[in-house]
Image (spheres, rainbow over the protein chains, first blue to last red):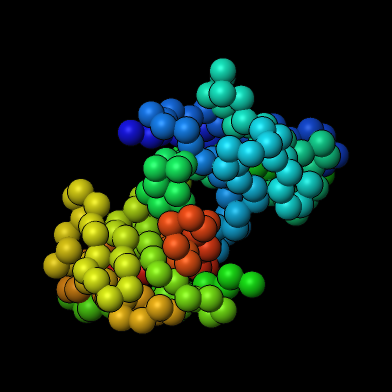
Length: 116
Length: 115
């Protein structure tokens, strides 16, 4: 079984400030981990993924995430928020080598607001 | 690359109508396609997984006779909501993958509103 917990359904940051979106996971097997972004009335766009290679993963739009097995965390960060980063962000987990990219479980999402 | 097109993007119809949503992989062949449902302010919930040429695998609690899925080709899957009612109103999103070792690519979703 696998699950994802995203702490904070809403996060507000000032433009130019650090963005930190928290994600903790639970998985009975080594996981694959993902962050997706969703803009209003659109599907999901993959920001980055961890698939058991480097623990610090760099994604698109300046985002990165670090896999910390000891903390079962995969927090998403960006050094400087931009207005265009305002969207909803979903953390997700799949069963890694057992299930590849199938059976992805999504967190509840964190809506990021960027204040000018 | 890896573009998934979903159509229609928005549909409004009367209660009792059946609605078909198409999901197409435009520049790759999708062995597997997934259908999700997203309620307002909630996450995506997997409804079913379909593999080309075989019957879809539905998640627990999803009525297969209510949500008909067809994956007749490597580039097209359809979801038909039969005899739709207001409680079926939701945002439906499909995704596609070449195989289980590749990431899912998502369509832009279909907002279904049943009056």
